[in-house]
Length: 210
Image 1: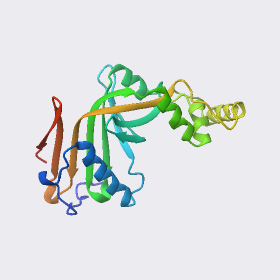
Image 2 (image 1 turned 45 degrees about the horizontal axis):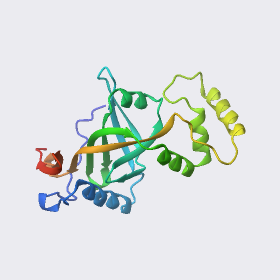
Image 3 (image 1 turned 90 degrees about the horizontal axis):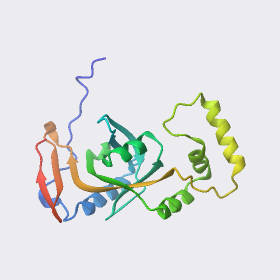
């Protein structure tokens, strides 16, 4: 299979320094709202990259479940691979890729667990099946087969009533950003890459070569 001829040129928009809002969270919100309004499928899906204690990187798709001046929140099993990696090295990177808009946003920073009350609040909003799944699945661990998982789902489904409590090993994280990159695709691969970096108590903006 020859992939060398598969390419597209990006011509939808441009991103100039004069376009940037004063705060990167404001800029993210503006782009995120445009992604939502455009009808993209799951614009809140993001790549989360972590690194293990022995410096081995890993990436996976997770869902953004809230963002504000405190950072970007997502939820998972604390005993999963990413949970162990964040415990060993609490820094991570996020990547949003909105292909129809020819845009990417890269965000980096330190990660901390959200308060238990926030995890409880979000867990209570999940569909019951997802709540049972959080109890049944020993995320990232080797399991015998699908039937074994289904038996655990059935057992926890029978154990819990309409209200399913949050497991102790499940909850939220928040990435507290110190770096943002807003990428707008341009023709001839001369993309716009504008960056916010935390410099003391203020954000500094820069342009990167494509």
